[in-house]
Image 1 (cartoon, rainbow, N blue to C red):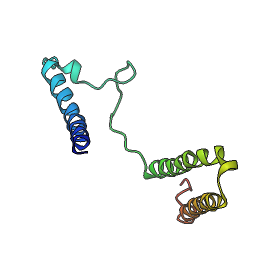
Image 2: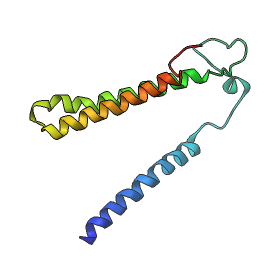
Image 3: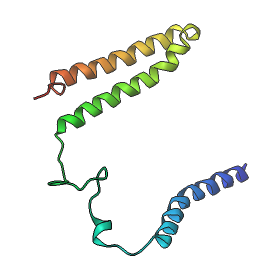
Length: 118
């Protein structure tokens, strides 16, 4: 049984070391001749006009966060919908509780006016 833990430890060591080895290798073989053209901002094949740093409003992030919450809700509900005929009453109640909790979160976001565009 101890050998199995040794294999898991070896796999964990490889998983931790692999990103460092690959980044180090690419750092070694990269071209090291920067010039102003290589360091300039490049966007869609055109020269940039004006400031390239654009700040987004926090409203975008709130919309994205609410979208992600409901996207994950759908991801959790699809397997339940597929196996609906074979699950018991307990699973149905759990799914309803899950939907109610997410609906409460939506109502909370709505009352905090996170869904309004100003």
